[in-house]
Length: 280
Image 1 (cartoon, rainbow, N blue to C red):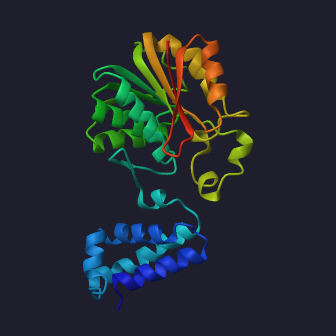
Image 2 (tube, helix red, strand yellow; image 1 turned 120 degrees about the vertical axis):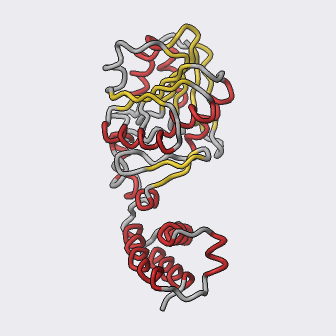
Image 3 (cartoon, rainbow, N blue to C red; image 1 turned 90 degrees about the horizontal axis):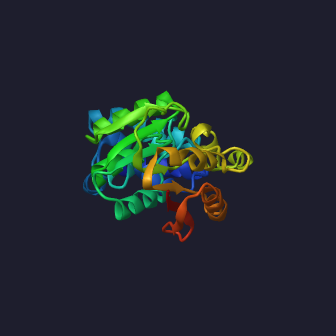
């Protein structure tokens, strides 16, 4: 007969042997997920022998450990990720929301007024759009090329009781009849194609390349945002984009060449360039 501490220890050891760097954290999170417990419940019950129901979950736990050993991202196993204090469904059709992207949302919440019309381009899981609507009171429309991503984003909006309108479009191509907005925000694909192939297995093998690949120089989608975005922005409207840590100068040049003004760069918690903001 097992107990929580025994199965956690075994799970942790298996992940360590598989070379998973965050083996302790991941084994614990999978334990909480499979057995539907939290940290306090674990501490209180870690030595208590399993009953029949708990024993049935042991195989499920080690199946989850095996998936993580194969470098399947933790969030794709649990199907969830927290972003700005809200919980989101995630799967292999969307990029896993990152802490870095919270800076993008925080800047909009800091500088923009509730009630403004916002367009989230390349919405993926919908985490940016939904968070802005819930925490900022914005009128939000969210756009993505992937119908699979939009299906999940709609589920996330329902889960978080957010009023967001979703559109399927290849960037701005299918949005010709859309009213202008006050803010455009985007976390577009921005990794160079050749670099995508060099990423860790759990990123390049499991996260959608469509959400990662910024074409040859990583700047393809910024050029589209700069060229087409201003047509959808009200006069004086602002545009916010997430960038790679080494892309600030190139992105500033792209948007400056299209007439955007007051271009600002903001850093993430690690002190790296992460957000570029400007106005029309």
